[in-house]
Image (cartoon, rainbow, N blue to C red; front, side):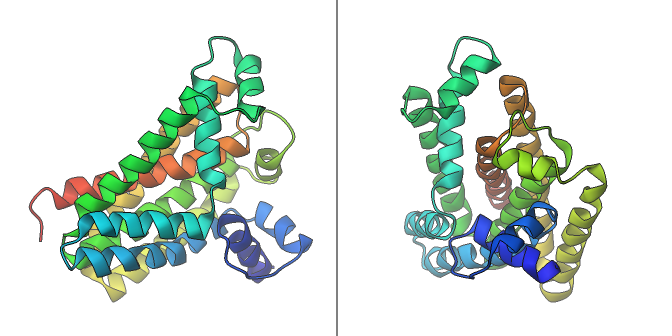
Length: 258
């Protein structure tokens, strides 16, 4: 069951060709703890171009490499959520009118602005970290990724879906009690970092905590905007939480630490 859920999480959160079936999807909708578990692996992958290029004093190329690999790994589904939520945010009306705009296929100014802020903010945060101590770089990127996925998991456990759909498949299958396995994964990840590379733990902890905080703020705002959550909110939480975690790492790197 656990392996099936993990396989389903990899298929849901990435574009990696892991195979699987409908049983894997059912398993992952009942196992949000798999989100941060997958985040460990994707975070390590995303750190590779930043460490490789940032170590050669090429922070802008490191940021481009990070963005390219991020989109290649996860596709544009989560960014599509950012765009849809951006369009909904600029609507003058009630939640029903905002949801109607969110569901249409047209791309408005709100979507463009939201995507620019998300992608440029992410690139600038990565560039700000890239020239730092390598373990700080790895800790920041892995911590931000794990925190972003944990924020999505928390949304699945605590939120209420507005209507039937992708979001409802997670929120209806989980409750506050399912946060315990998520917390255990975070604790196990922190323990692994402390045991293997203790110098990376402060950056990883700060980035993960900032990502959780950023994801919570975005989820709270979106819930008020739409009177519930949906699949777009899940995607936007992932992007916003990651950005918050990377920004925290950039602040740490700018504080003069090695």
